[in-house]
Length: 548
Picture (cartoon, rainbow, N blue to C red):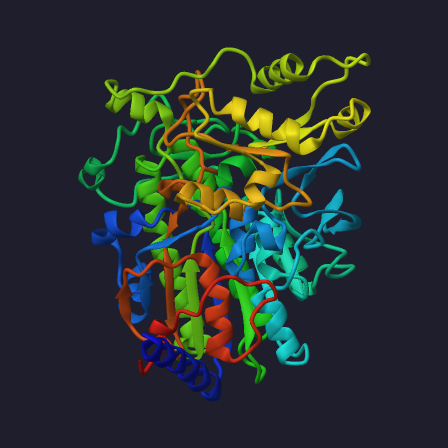
């Protein structure tokens, strides 16, 4: 047994040394499709062309069993995992938002009071809350800061958390413009200003999102006009969808909501990516550069229409063609053989509640209890520990399935936090919609016995998480929750995502081994020969290395 283990270790070291000694790729491109289930690749595969998803599958490593090992399957935490190689318990981004006890306010994961937006009014954003480093950070250190790291998205948290601490530039969309933060620079590069003034973002006003294929191709999907779809911002529930917002005569803020809920929003980001490659001379400067692209529109479309809709099917096919065009551009400019491309997602999505209730009315759905969870917690703790003369609340805040106790009140009553938190967690388990609940002390000492427990522990950041954390059952929907789709649970429909790697040093193959997006950063590090990100927990996917 020891010889077998030693043999495996030697092989992994040889893989790493071989990869590091080869000429490094000129450009690494990491693509995240926001809210993109793995099963879309299988379900819609017949309709893909040769140059997009199929190019990645047929020329690279396709990991079919890639899942997030955390409970908070949402945009901020997912994008933080991809290039840190760690989860929120290490990198600090365990949720999109959390409660800051010192300031008594909700903290957005990339909000930074010390910076300002560049290109629009408002507070800035930065990776200040991110703990540790990313692959891009280590790449810049390895190349004495000669490598460039450019990160683009529709969402600030996606661009920032992929880009890391040392990114040269992170850009995200604010209405008709792409903006950055003074964390990166004091003004926008000339090429970004030119892009913003080109009128491209507003040029889609009045266009219609038509179906790409004949109507017969959509027969495997749900109704086109389902009552549980969200057709706001003037989109309507039925194809074709007008891209104009709530006012057909002029551009208002609702137009941008419609644009981002259509394939045209992705077209804009792809155009910006091509501009960035040319203007920044990525992959053409004698060092390895990194471009991060997070396409957010799939998330907006998925939330509105659900994973079984005509819209998600059509959007996925258009994404396939968009990727093919982008890859062709990169091939002509740099050569795909000189690149490494990674494609994944930050999370999946659950079916719309209305969809399940319409198609499986016989299924037993757990009813939402009467009254709020906060009221329940207040009543439980008042009954168990009495009331305080100040009549202050027991609970400061409940956010993201984290319960923050009122520590000042507990101190005044001389009540140990761990005692109160454990009592509340135990009481929560009596509620039908709670399948797991732990105090912070219990979770830190936990030896996980299930996937849910493991993922809850990986989403627990001691300095930022609540005193009690809990989880809901699979396919749980609150009372009256029928339209749209959601995510954020520790279950496979939210956790199972694509993981495809193609290009320089990667061999073709389909792998069913248990992996996750946390493995992307260490794999890229080993492939190129740079240091692993600080705090990484993911492994090197050495089975995908060429020559093995």
